[in-house]
Image (cartoon, rainbow, N blue to C red; front, side, top):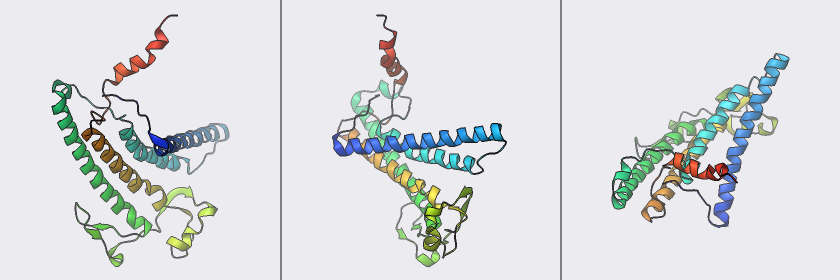
Length: 229
């Protein structure tokens, strides 16, 4: 069932505004960087060397952050032609099963995201193949905080990271743990939003994890524009 998300409470509205502002800032930054690069390329035969890599990282941030936002506002598309053939109790049971699967998937994704990012940030990975059973000993982790991106230069206001993370050696490019940090953050947000969605399903405040009949809803939204005065 398609639903228009309405945040509740002051905290809910603040979080919702922050999420939408963050998404808008990423989209705006991607647009500005791409536009400047086009102007420089065709107008001055030059360009921002780091522009392509920056937009790639921003797009990855947009996807990793946006996927949890879409879960919250029930914006993920899905096919419910078969599900709608069942009665409501069966649909609810199927939705709860889907919720459990999604929570399990997000949990595994969070473990993998942390383990991948941790070494770039000089932090230990988790132990256990599927379920985290603890943290590796510091000596066993292959720290890689010295890894840098290819083109994005290190801004002066982050120079202190060389002393904190790279044994006193200055970074020429930004270290990879900065853009990669969205991996565990995005996975954690996704897990949190799936848990919230599961609770909504269990308490009958929602009927599914996906938006359905999106074409019909889109027609309803613009119907008033086609009504002749």
